[in-house]
Structures are given as structure tokens and as C-alpha cells.
Length: 417
Image (cartoon, rainbow, N blue to C red; front, side):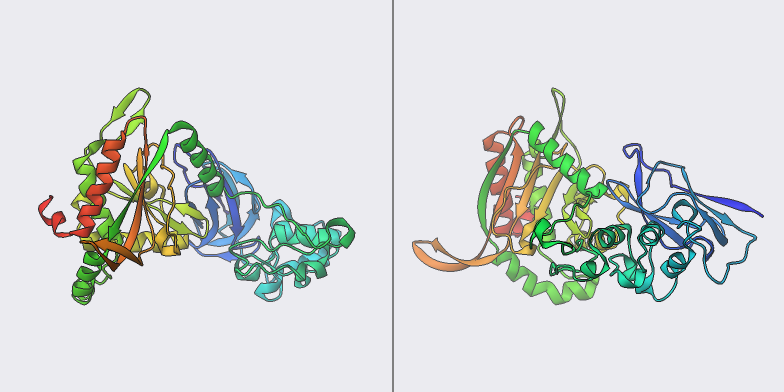
């Protein structure tokens, strides 16, 4: 027998521990070299752990949901073994030997009937079959949460989960209570925060408690940008293979203003102000796990096409949970585009240690006054939150006006006016 250990990848210095999400293989199954065995969630990214060698997954040391540290052994692969016809349950969370029948059912059948190791143990103890429990895991697998809900409310009540209007992968389904006299028609379900969500909460509270946040607003006529996009969209797409969006204009306008008012691009370190001679712009991106902010490095040196391609890449990686830690580290200024979801106005929260953030909203036709006449223009409300400890109202207001001017006359960006 030749055993190869599967270990947690080296985590970054700022990440002390991580959580195992769900094993893609079970003990006793054959694995190929570099085949992804499990995903590990940190408070920043999701890491994929590949098999270090081909063989049979001989033992799962740490089951789904376990908290692990860098270089910790989580499984072992026997490189000389041959996979059995029916894979054995994970050692870390195998069902008791006295109840083999439910365990076999938990690992067999169609994808929708498969229970994860921890879930199989719970179902076995309660005498339930995975086929009776709707799974919310990948490919319909029954997770530990599904098993707990089923054991608490019965398989039938779990099957009658209250619809939320979103896929089960996005939000947990709340099972109906077993007894009307307990909760009536008001069921509840307690779900732990993911590491990313807990980290987001921590950083938002940190920002609110350590920064003197103030927000200034302005409105911008987006007609010039929209006309420019319409004129060059086809040619731009054909030349660069990506559409010309609004975000590249917002990024360019932001960098334009940051150059004029460097304090907007600065950060606070104790009693010192650090003025950054580079422009790393964070772009807030929504993902199934929560809000993430990947960074456009040296945005001042990027073309419109470079920006659009990078933002598209960030969006794809965010949806797949494949953004790397290095892609979300640092940043001197951020942009949050709530307009993609229809937001008309908001007061964005600063992303520490940055000192300012631009909030962009939905562009809507509105009645405005020009030269004494009421006309209809595509207007967008801009909001910039800033740390009033180092940024005075003058710099904040003038910085936002500089962004407005650049968007209403994009030619200013060409001549740095």
C-alpha cells in the first residue's frame, strides 16, 4: 500500500483557517491525478484542492463543514488500490456499522438520492432514506443541513419546503414546522454565515466605526457617453472582442478626478496620510457567495478595452468562485455600480483602508432644466462617500464634479482637462 496525503493548500498570511465545503468524491472511489476533490472556503476566496496522485480515496479525515488550517491533512489516497464497486462512506463521518442499509442507500442511486457523508450519518441515525429528503447541494446531493432539517421536521415536511423564489443553491429552503402549535405558519431556520459573509460584515462594521463617513451627491447627463458608445460599439466589439460598457467610462473618470485631487486616492495609517502614486481601482462585483471587490491594477495605464476585458473576467470568475486572493488584495479607490440592479440612489460604505468610494446608479430619463427650458435627459445620480478625517468637503465635492465633467464631455479624458 502506498499512501499519499491530501493537504489543505498554503493559505495567505491574513487567513488563519478555512472551511471544507463539500467532497466531490467519497471514500473508496477512484480518483485521477489533479482531479478536484473538494472546495475550501476562506473569508476571501474559494480554493480547489486537486488530487496529488491517482488512486483510490482511501480515507476522508475531515468531513464537510470542518474547519481546517494550512497544510492540514484532510484525506489520504492509496495509489496502489483499485476502486470497489460500491464506494465506502467517509471515515470521518461514516454511519455506524450496525446500520449498513441506510448508509448504502445514502451513497447509491441517482444524483438526487446521494447524501454527503455527514448527512448520511444523521439520516442513518434517524432511520431516514436520502431518497425522501430533497437535496440542496450540488447535483441535488443531500447536505448536512438538509438532513438536520429532515430529522427535525420529518422527511415529508422537508419536502414541503416553503418556496423562496430563488434556486436552492442560492438560499436555504425553510422547512414547514412539524407542529402548528409550535410555530404556527411562521417557520424559521438558523443558518451560519459563510466565511465570506462574516468577513464582509466585519469589514463593514470596521469601516463604520473607524471612518468619519460623509457622502456627497451629484447628477450627470449620460447622453454624451451613450452617444459615443452607440457610435463606436460595433467597431469596438469587432476590434477588441468585448462590448464597450459604461464601467470603463466611470473608471476613466474616477482616475481623472483622483489625479486632480490625490487625497481621494490616499489612505490613513495611524496619524499618517499615505498618498498613493498609483491607481488601483476596486470594482464591486456580486457573486453567489456575496460581494467581492477585485482590483484593476494601474487603471490609469489601461485602455477602455483593457478595462472592459478585465471587468468581464472578474465577473466570470466571481460567478464561478475562482477569484484569487491576490486579485482582491489592495486597492486605493473603489467603484460600486448599484445601477445594474436598478438602484436610483445609495450611500456606499468605504472599503478600508481606502478613504473614498464612488457609487454609480441606474441611468433614467428625467426632466431637467437647460437654458431655461425643460428637457428630457438620461441622468445618473453619482454618490461619493469619503473619510472626512482626511478629505474635506471641498476636495470631495470638486472631485465628484471632475468626474461629472469628464462624463458629460468625454473628450476631456483625451486631453486630461
